[in-house]
Image 1 (cartoon, rainbow, N blue to C red):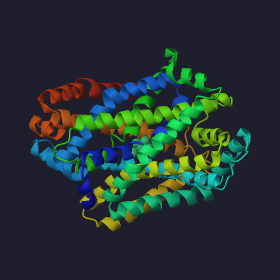
Image 2: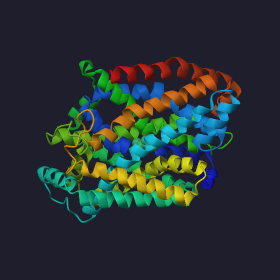
Image 3: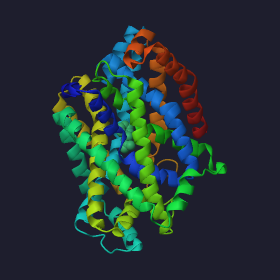
Image 4: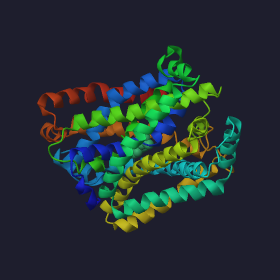
Length: 446
Ligand code: PHE
């Protein structure tokens, strides 16, 4: 486990650390495009409901395990299971989490690399005066160049793994402190601009007026997966951060604060992006390119557009960076827990994620037709199955462990919410979160 993480010095620092993990591609890139493919408002409604009923309670479960165990996921789960007289096999949940974040980081790094490319392109003024069609064609050409994708993927992963190797707390704390408010203000500005476009009212209706026939088991499954993904819950990644939570902090308050921030970032991004989509007569179900095409178009119409677009991509890059660090940390912690040195563990993880990422990078060209499962190529698989299936499955087990296995006294202390708060949480997890996750998973799979 990273020694340096012990320094989450204050309540605020802890909330910022969790927000840094939560706010990332999930909010700004994934939410709009998955909502676009899944009926807009219907998706949003279910996703927000899942954040409240599953995301927040399970986030508390995950963090409190880390807080009670005071170690990396594998060891924390092992110790706590032994203490509760449960099977020591519970600790393999930590390994399952590590596998999940491995898959996620492999595509996350590739897509974050797109932000690097777009940051450089916007600094160079490449979007100045370009039409919507030109910007769209430019993006397609970029995706068809595996060399470029791999270069940016390598750069991003290098950025991430150097921080992880060094140990993350202090730098991350300062970065988050600055980044979150800036990102928020910029998104507010962008949404304000969106309000002046013709697409704004259509975008609002599309995002907030659900048509209930759009709700299918698949939409529900995607919404649940996204709720876990965007909150960074279900892979034992937050568990590691919980281990260093200040003693006197209330976990429910922190979890709520993070969820509210996380949802509002997604909403602002959604409003901005869909206003442009409708103003330009584009297709909301355009797929993973949605944000990368719409935002350059939006900014190119604003005064000082190139400058603001560069600022935006810089902030996005920093936000995905803090999330990627959180994705990598539990894998490194797990290997360290198995006795490896931190530098060695980081190198092994970096190399494996890099190799796995190549498959995603090639999925837009050479390997586009290589569809080993469900008619989906590697990028489509790793960007859907781990978020939609593995995270809820992990969350289900995490919740079961915290609400059924761990002794009440332990949980109550780690939750920091008094007896009535504890009972409320436990009832929600036992009788709502766990059964609901199970049913949706089953329904979606069948
Ligand atoms: N929540 C992150 C995002 O929205 C992704 C993430 C998932 C991070 C799981 C950690 C664990 O970008």
